[in-house]
Length: 197
Ligand code: IMP
Ligand code: MG
Figure 1: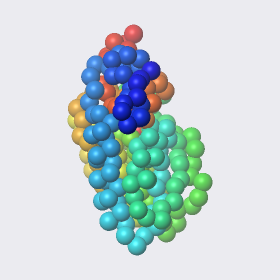
Figure 2: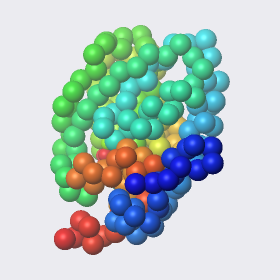
Figure 3: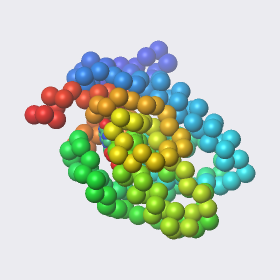
């Protein structure tokens, strides 16, 4: 599974293993890293003098979160939340359940919710509402991907967005299909044959 380049960095073979299930690679890990670095700088600037709490929405945002927090030069804190709106299908159910809540309270805190992808927007608009009710001083959303064509909540404001993508089911860099493919370093469109089986 992969080779090492001259700098000793592992290069996954993009034609074998999990990559065979992709229709195409949409965003390479290099493209993603560039955007994540830019976003880290923007957040560092916007929150200068503050101590924000970054909330990772498990599990999809975990890879993005791990990279993003290391690009932010602030005394931030972390918290984690798991919610479910999907099951194992590729279409949202519209039902949002909290599977794991925050460990710490957020009264008076500047909260940045970190999400993998905004699809219909149902999950994030629900989350935004409940976190604001808990007395956060401010709340912003940072998402890696946006599928604007599928939005059902048109007034949902996503403050920080890395990439707009077409209406296709994507996996990799934390995003899954049926809990698999999260460890792909790139983001790709899953071959429809995989979920139409
Ligand atoms: P929303 O509530 O419809 O915006 O759903 C957002 C959630 O659906 C994301 O956090 C993902 O977990 C999941 N999701 C939406 N589109 C995709 C996709 O293309 N690949 C993998 N997961 C997706
Ligand atoms: Mg998710």
